Image 1 (tube, rainbow, N blue to C red):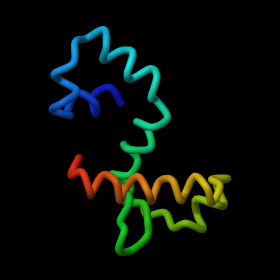
Image 2 (image 1 turned 90 degrees about the vertical axis):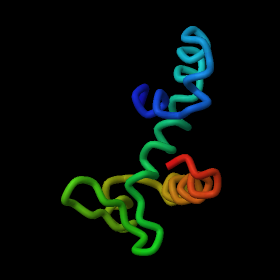
Image 3 (image 1 turned 60 degrees about the vertical axis):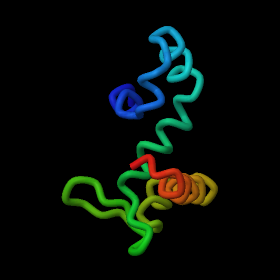
Length: 84
């Protein structure tokens, strides 16, 4: 997650102590943003390595509908702001 943050240009501009505070304070949000890199909006699946997971797969693993919607929403936000 830290490596992901360090790839963000604006994050690099912040001093190291503030970077630490930001990562610690927003770890859940950062994790959601990171995970969205694996979501295919057209196929509505998560692709990780050579494996694909549908929404039903995630539900079977115990991921709630709300969390799935957050992941999809974050993917849209990432595309909008062109983070990835």
